[in-house]
Image (cartoon, rainbow, N blue to C red):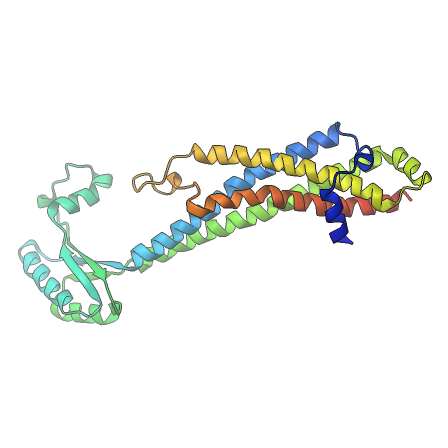
Length: 299
C-alpha cells in the first residue's frame, strides 16, 4: 500500500490537488520549516564531517611522533643530547630523530612568550623530535634505556594530550549526527502540526468529499502529496542557502586551525543533495500518519 501511495505521489492528480489549499498559514509554515531545517542540517553535516577529518588527522599525525626532552645542566646538555641521539639511532621503531635548533625552539615558544625570548639566559631543555617508523616504538623499553644511559631525558609520546583531543573531536562529530536526527524529528513534528491544522481547517470540505463518494485514501493522498512537495521545495531552497553559507566560510589552513576547515571536501559535496530527499521522506511519513489519524477522528 505504501508503494502505491509513493507512486501516486509522483503522479500529478489535478482533482486531488484542488482538495488542499495552495496558500495559507500551513503552506507557509511547511515551506519555512523545511527550508530552515535543511539550512541547519547543512551546517550540522559540515560540522560532523569536519570533526571527523580533524579526529582522523590528529590521530594519524600525532600517533607517529614523539618528543624527547633533555633536562640537564647547561654544561651537560650537549653530551646528553649526543648520547640520546645515539640511543635513538639504535632503537627499533625510530625512523628518524633530530635535535631542534635554538631558532626552532624559540619559534615554538614565541606564541606564549613573544619572539624576543632570550633562550641563552633561561634553563630551556633541549628538544629532540622523534618520528616513529615500523614496527612501532616500544616507549616503555625506550624509557628504561634512557633512564639508564641518559638520566636527564624525558620521553613524551603525546598520548597524554593526544587522546583527549581525538576524543573531543569524535564527540563533536557524534554531536553533529545527533543534531541532524533532532532536526529531522523537529521537522516531522512541525509538519505533523501543519498537516493536522490543514485537515481540521478543511473538515467541511472533507465531509463533502466523503458524501460524493471520495475515499479516505484519495483524500489523504491529496494532503500527503501537497505537503511532501512543499517540504521538498522548501528543503531545496534551504540546502542551497546552506551551501552558499558554507562556501563563504574560510578555507582550511594550518594557521587558521579547526574553525577554517568547516566546509565540505571532495565527494562530501554530494551529501547535501540527499537532504531535500530526506526532508520529503520525513514529510511524507509525517503527513501520511497525521492524515490517517485525523481522518479517523473526523469519521
